[in-house]
Length: 432
Figure (tube, rainbow, N blue to C red):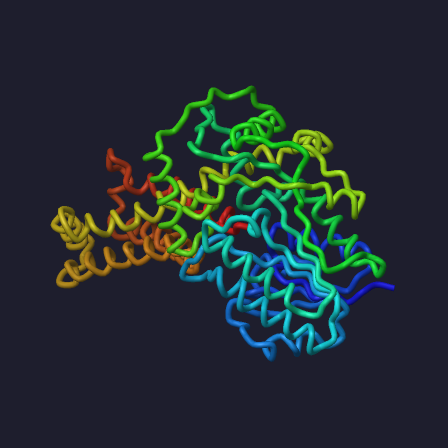
């Protein structure tokens, strides 16, 4: 008979794979999600529960969701603090309240995902708060299991696993300075471990490191993905430390806009120490033999979807940045050096006294659309507004100034590729 399981972090790379496995084994899964977005609605969960873990800091916030639950699996995690993410809230206070609620509700079995090495060193808020979450669980009278995976990759792609794919498509492979060894673990092996520890006869009150059987450099891992995607080995070029730092700093900046780039300062500090550990206890207890990265990838050849996704992953931020800056720059030019020309066109179109205010209004709308595209939370609205405005411009100018269709600079013709780029951005907007 299947269990009724509360799964936190259900939309993440690990959480969504765990959910699919548990459902296939006949378990009933109550998925905890932060919002009812597209990623949540695609989950094959028995029921969705909306909880912002970072704000669920009391046991009472969790107790209503634990009624009838047999076990809890926590896969929730965030890489770095941002306006929308809190490492302390998700990794420490929120899960501590969940664990306390499990004691009160009589839910004995708790499987909790941490990160490899947090019991040995904690150079960032990510690892420090992960360790606090581990300690909160170990202090409870529960049948707990703490799983500490290294870098997890699988057929699904998100975060680091997507970054490997994207970098693998570059003709020249940038080598980041000061990166430690990575014992990459395959997602299916991690998911099988969760299934094992949900068995009634499985041991408890232990912490295991889930790491792969080989220690790779970051560059070696990318080259393995490159081979899997069908590319020849790439020439490697070592990036200067300053340039590498700028890339991570750029990731921090887009993180402040709500985007979850894997290239952030937390990742830089964590990757310096590497992601390595000892898998012997994991293998001994579960009987699972973790697979080398190349062998796991070779078990299922890359598909055309992979061939499209990998280069698009690195192009995605370029597309969104280009659209955002284009709209902002267009508005700024209209308010500055292009104001007189814009007003003249408005007067030629017969708008008379509202010509100047019309230029100002159009410019401010362009800038607002550019800012909306830049912000993760409002990107879809910004793109849709940009699409509507582009089509409005075409129709209005066709009616009022049809001569512009014959302009040698092609101002109206150039709207067509802009519309196509907006449609592409809408198609690739979702991260998972």
